[in-house]
Image (cartoon, rainbow, N blue to C red; front, side):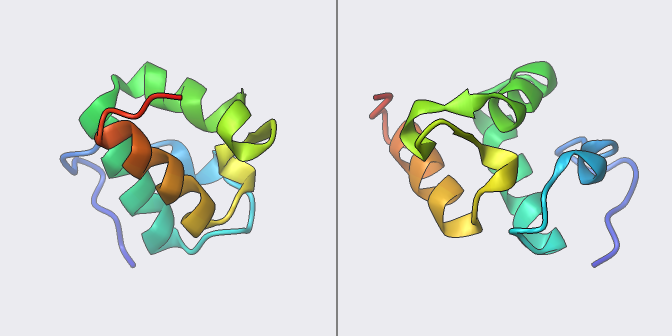
Length: 80
C-alpha cells in the first residue's frame, strides 16, 4: 500500500513508531480512526504510551483487533 505524503490523516511519520503486529494498511486505518478523535500529537501519545485497556501495553505493540476494539469503544463514547 502506497500512502500519499499529503493524505487526509497526516500519516507522514507514523511508520517508524510501530511494532510488527499490524500490516501497513491496518496501521493506516488505526491512525485515521485516531485522527477522528484526537489531534496528531494526541494520537501519537495514544499510540506510544501504555494504555490500561491494552493491559498496560502500547497500542503500537498490539494487534489490529485489540487496538480497534478500544478505538470502537471510545468512538461510541465508552471511555473507560
